[in-house]
Length: 307
Figure: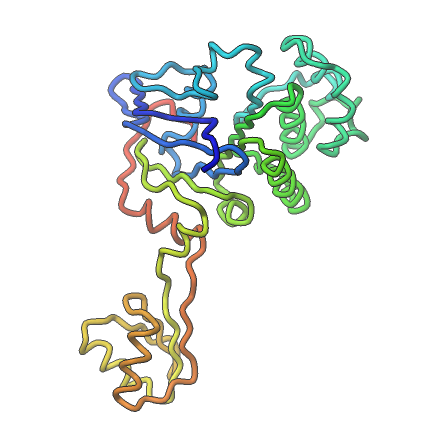
């Protein structure tokens, strides 16, 4: 099993009487892209801020390479991070912004040109950031996070503001980082994109862990609806109701069944000599699974939680 670069253990955070993170536990393996998902107010941004030493935990630990962020030697060379709402001086160019970041972190300024090209900002490198779109600022933030050539990358909503081409670029970029053996933890609301990007998924709600599994396992273990098309839909519908199922009539010949498997429906139809023209199990998407998992969580107000 791959080494875990990020480990969260029994993490708890209170903001006054508001419990933002509640006994949270997970580990992120190296060489993977892990999606960190949850509804608004679930505790995602608070967890990431604790991980980066920006907020102190009430209890528990969040470590990178076995250490608290604040105790890392040269943390910007170990960890690159982009948090949602990162600020840039509007009168400073992208190139000069990266120069300032490099100087503050004692990082190699010779990487600036390479990184600007990597994130697609070379043509705008000497333009003022105040004139940048949100997507361009996202790209600049990613370039800044990579100045130290870090092993670990933590991104909060990196797809915000990106156009379809930019989202496709981000997907390939994150996959390339994981292929190099780096650890990528990415929080996002763009679930359709996460399903094409991540290896593993962490889902939290009300500050607690709901699920942590490889993407394929998470979506594969959940059952979607079964579509059944038959010229004898009336009889099959009645039989399904009789055995405790809840078919939904879509059109005169089509039923949708969410509480029976295709095997169960096929066997019932065969026993009753019902001809089937279609019997298809519809796989659930990551978005479907996410909504199912979080639907029962009653989200209470979470103080200053930003995500």
